[in-house]
Image 1: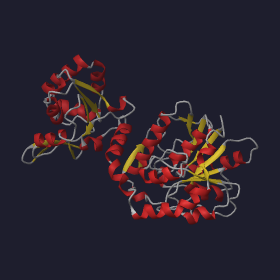
Image 2 (image 1 turned 180 degrees about the horizontal axis):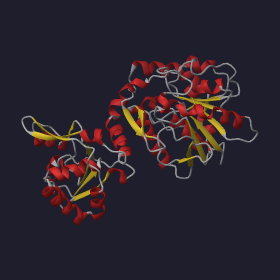
Image 3 (image 1 turned 90 degrees about the vertical axis):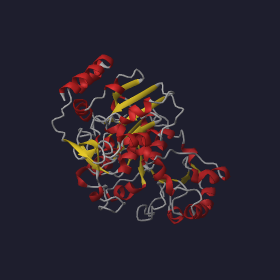
Length: 430
């Protein structure tokens, strides 16, 4: 064991001395490593097999075949036992193979147990920690075992990898030819035609400070503060997502703008009574019954989704960014209206305090706490329960923030997920 480790680390120290120091500092004592045998053998780390126990080489060839053969640069996330790296390095056209470590302790343990010199010493290989880069690199293959084993430092990249991998599956219900979608858009056509274009709001609030209010459990911490600010003569603009509307009203807070995009939203979420002074920004998948009942101004817009392609050609309207959640168009609306400072409330993307949403019972809005099998890091650097789609929504918001460096984004709470690109509000974040 020590002989393998010394030889492996010697290569790494020669090629990447700073990375070697980080690897030598990894604590492997908490990892349980077991030899698992089948037709072949592999290592199991904390009950997770790093590779197939029957035919590691065949598995690696199958993984390699998913990557384009004509790409000179390839990325591998996770180090495994080196099998995939060796398969890819056999390609004559590979000029650079970037290997991203997803768990430093796991890799340090593998270096103790298995000879990794053949791929580590190849001059085409570049080795780094996945979390050292803010975004995933294409084309890539992510080793499934290490997506499960990813450590805290590399968790953000793990989340992006999983979100990217699930993208096609997640978009399956948004087929433009779906009878349900065609029927809903046809039913909304007359309203879209007569309602105002959301683009009219763009640029209407230059340099305005905006509060974007979502429905995460941490919102409950701020009801009293938001109510006081709402009653001030000069205050930020309040934009809320649809599911936050009812909890806000119940706590005496009237938003200026409500954003809704989801076909499952009903009058239960958007009660229309006494809404004459509240603006509704919507996309045409919203229930026409809800739209017709709304008493205040209505503005229609689209996302880049293919489901709006035909409607967009018939009735051009402004576009808002959607990355799976209504918080994305709410944030985009704030920016396009002219905001230079946006404070996020209830943007938790997790279940702090073992709750799913503010103002709603467990399961009312879909996810149930018992179904939370995944985690993100909260504002204190601690793991907190969440679900996969919440992590995807978080990734897309972080990408949105990164794309708008001219806007300062504040997070009002440390209780929910850490949001890369935002800073904690000095007054609101406890």
